[in-house]
Image (cartoon, rainbow, N blue to C red):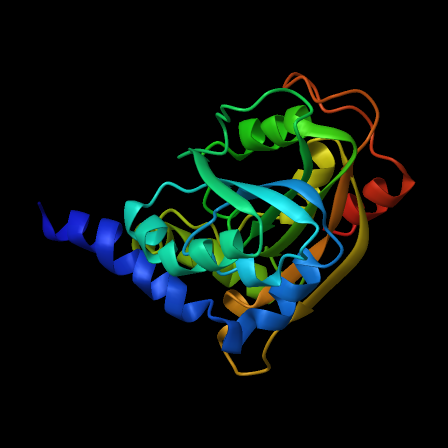
Length: 236
């Protein structure tokens, strides 16, 4: 095993787990998970840090997680969740290919994951496919900042950052990508999480609820935005 493989497969998942611990982002996780019920698909399950925040009404979580290290770290949280009557199973390594039936999920949750999915367009198409009518996509992500000077630095740093951070993209405009994939956004919040100089490059957080708009996303063509979506896209 090379040093690169050791870093990517073993060290980096642990760094992510520490960086996104509840003492840092717990309030964002609670907001993303609040009010959910039924069957949830979680993109980027990681070490299971969202599990304690799911209401008891969530009966199952279908985990999408590429890292064996992160999955192994989740053991205690899975046991605790299943002790509350829920069920967790790992269904895929890649959100772009879900081994799940159509309309089988009441909600999808993604926390700091859409930045690093290699084929995000296909993953969002899969999200639309598996959501039941009335289903919701809850997200908390870091995104391309609205300030031109910060966005410029995000784009400059992206080549090196992507190599160091597991394929993470600083320069993805997550709300615009969700809208382009056929979702309508609501209950959104977007802000810098810190005023510390330099932190804005990784600290423009976006959260909200995305619901499928119109016909299911076919992967060919993107259609018109609704009034809310068009305004959001035009602002970026």
